[in-house]
Image (cartoon, rainbow, N blue to C red; front, side, top):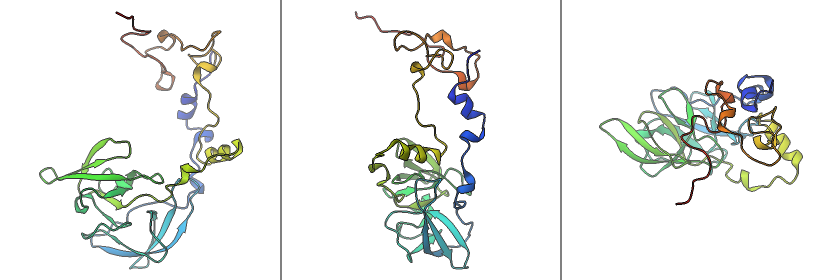
Length: 240
């Protein structure tokens, strides 16, 4: 019998691929407030399980929350949560109250569920248009994909801090090993066609080539499906 593919082992949820949530600094959630609330930046925290730094905010009622830090935010600055007004960097507002063309991040996909989109360091989405008839807002994600979300979803104005993280090269393999390990990523990764036939459907053979489309069954589990599944055609196209 062959071995399980990496995607199958990852999907089983064993500790090797499970996120180290016990090392997280805390949950990043939007406070549930009916009225606008102001908060002051107390300190910044380097969270080992995230690519972006976190900011600890003290609200007016002396409760503390954690938020993904935007760029150009300093210790002691004040931010506003909820309400209308100028979309200053760091303010948490509804999408419908943010001007078109403004950068936003940590965007909710459903009102009250917390930020789900655009949370990596240096990223931002842009508000493209508001549709009052359907109460939706059109956004352009960092992947250039356009999405429509409800206008009462919350988002943070600005860019995520830590934009220069990917500019620093990994000078040693050990540095990348620990950087991947803390986020439960596999390193190094091996191409399927470089493996043996027992390890991957693409493996085996005397020269690098991708296995036949029939090497993977149509009824195989999701993690096992690689290559051309029910492809209309394969191979090079003949020149006319």
